[in-house]
Amino acid sequence: MPSSFLRRFFSFPAMLIAALAASPFFASLDIQAGGRVLRDPDIWWHMRNAETLLATHHFIRADAYSFTTAGQHWIDPEWLAEIPYYLGFHFGAERGLFLVMLAAVELVVAGVLVLAWQRSGDIKAAFLAAWAAVLLAAINFGPRTILFGWLCFIIELYLIQDFRRRPHLLCLLVPLFALWINLHGTWLIGLAFLGLFFVSGLTEFSWGAIQATRWTSRERNTLLAVAASSIAALFANPYGWRLVVYPFDLVFRQQLNVAVVDEWASVSFQSFYGSVIFIVAAALFLFTLANRRSWSLHEVLFTALAFYSGLSHKRFLFLTGLVVCPLLAVELKGAVFAPYDPKEDKPVLSALVMAGFLFFAVSHIPSTPVLHAAEAQFFPVRALPALQDSCANHRVFNRYSWGGYLIWNARNIPVFIDSRTDIFEHHGILADDLAAENLHGSLQILDHYNIGCVLLAPGDGLTYLLRNTQGWRVQYEDELTTLLVR
Image 1 (cartoon, rainbow, N blue to C red):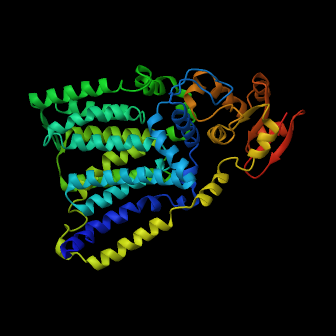
Image 2 (cartoon, rainbow, N blue to C red):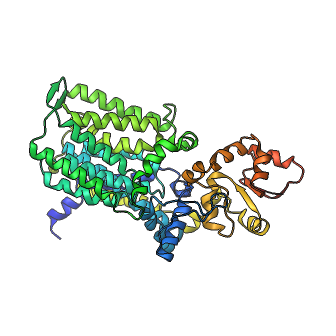
Image 3 (cartoon, one colour):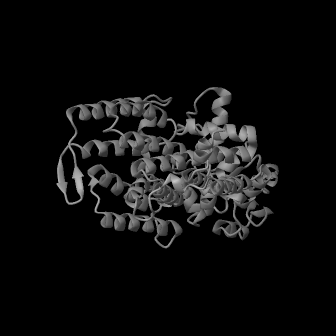
């Protein structure tokens, strides 16, 4: 093997890439225990959806998992993103699920690094900025369909970033949006950023450090054609216009969902993520002042929307990292580190460090038994036998976050509610669930739905109420779950 190839393979940039590839393990310190993988309540019904689709070759159009909304119209808006996770679990159980999630995360991390490296031309600045993005992105680490949406968004950012140099590549957005809408509702964010990019070139001015350059007629026509074609491509999905309007349903008709689900809450600056986003924002501001670099109008608009989205809803901190950190890399270039010089490479040292990161990463891939055992930290694993023995012929009132797990693991028992929040909000079930668990007419609600079993946590208020209500008894209990039977 030529020595020049070895020097490139074990170069300083290669060592930084290896370190970044291991960063998801550092960013999720509980990954060995499976916490980040198995804490998400959605993955179970996502896999059940994919299993049904692959078995029947028919797209889901009605609820078949609950007794409260059974048969009601429901579409599966993330059907394509569910399939990789199901196949991972099918062929490799919990470890297979983990590996699919890990592959998606690594692709996102690699995409951020490429964007930051392309923008700054400095691997050191790109590495540091990408690490900051990983810390913000950690809030979405887990087997989540949104990861595939962020992959599409990274591709869009790359095409937009390269538009003035290679405008013909922008037409790739059309098949991208056709794919994106079947993966995740974040396509609407992508469309918003495309709109901002178009608007930023409709005028020309210089206002302090902000510069706007008007599109040429050819560029403007290209953008308009691609935007119109991308919108048309959104209808290339199995649900037609219903899937296109789904994100708007979330924005305008699911206020209770947004109000009560934690990931829709705003960022607290007392939290870890609040500290990270403050440091990123402060660094971007200070280095921009120090470097006195001009910003294009679309960079300003993108940054403003990214910070607003991330601060308003924690789940969009990932978006903030994807948009802002490549810009941060530009400001860090030459301000923190000396430029990379290939002559200073130490291949032997780089090889040892890369081997260390590889060993760390491989050794921290949890086994299926470890991951399976971790389920008991978050879901009613040990209560399943008692639930199936005592409640097979009864309606079960279950905890919101356990519904998906029951859909996958207790298939003969329809759930009261699960984290497919949209259908339950539209039919009033979410409001009743919240009222019952907050002890507002709880007994009347249980009677209304003819509930025979209740599966909640020992410390829940409704658990305490039923313990002390005539006609209810504890059938099973452990430190995580209490099963009460009427």
